[in-house]
Image 1 (cartoon, rainbow, N blue to C red):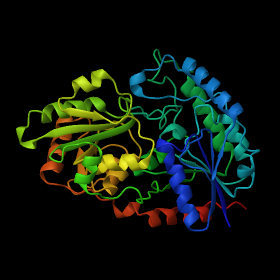
Image 2: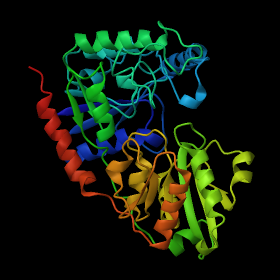
Image 3: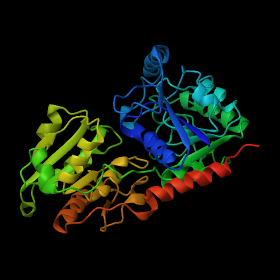
Image 4: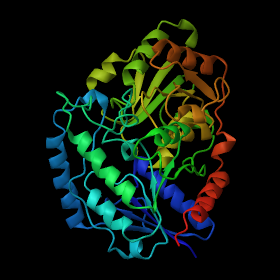
Length: 409
């Protein structure tokens, strides 16, 4: 039996991608385990959690990175330069694995030394990329900057003032040395957009890169009676619900201001009837509440998938106005519940939405088109559905085929 291990910062929220993949592997007799820095109460087996020492290291690294990145432009998102990390190469699950998947493992979990220690085990190491960090000098999304493709990262526009030998240049050099030294490193992009970016990056253009979508289990995310779900959430049966969700509502990546502008436009449309807004995630504040021109319910951060599924099913339309995103799981979850999705034509979102079929693709940074998309889905009672390319068995087969491609001599 082949043994797989996944390294993941946490299996909460976006970290569920690793957990879903593990559960899928186990259905086809693949021995899979997860090594996670942080504990979750929702999963009790198949995960090795790190102890207090590793968590202390991560906490110290957080402080160091806060200092190193104190001059970045917060509107351009996150930048990671891992200084401290843990040596996972001595853990039994890692030593005994045939193939090692590294998912999102930053914030003091892994640093460059940790990655080298894992690479030196001479096992296939698959970086499953959940954003652009692996292919840039440290930013998680480059937006319009393409230095990672052309000259190599330096004079990073995230830093004010920018300098030639800045953190991005130093990190780019560190990654170049690691990627060029080890031939057992492989990269998986879950969206066609990130795959194309990876093939153009100076860091990975000569490395083996594969396109495999996130695996999705629709067991919990499926259509339910809207009247019943609304009742459970204390929503009037006659309300038309527009939903939005993100780990952090006002993240610079998630395009909140464009949704707010779209809602302002829709508030002048008297034909939409009794509209309310349903939001889940963290980052809520009174300013956000007062700015929304509709009755709003804020659900807070939802830890369990059952609660998230209720939100999708209560909604008439789910909106993802992301300005930078890879393959947001919220889109798949909403579509699986039968609720159409409106989002900008950016990143991996076009992989999942067929325009005016299971949702609406709006022109980038065009709030009026987001409003038109919401209006179109409501008026035409568009039904969400997951596209065939994301069928669980199809995606699982792609991973099994990848195993054959990364076999070590």
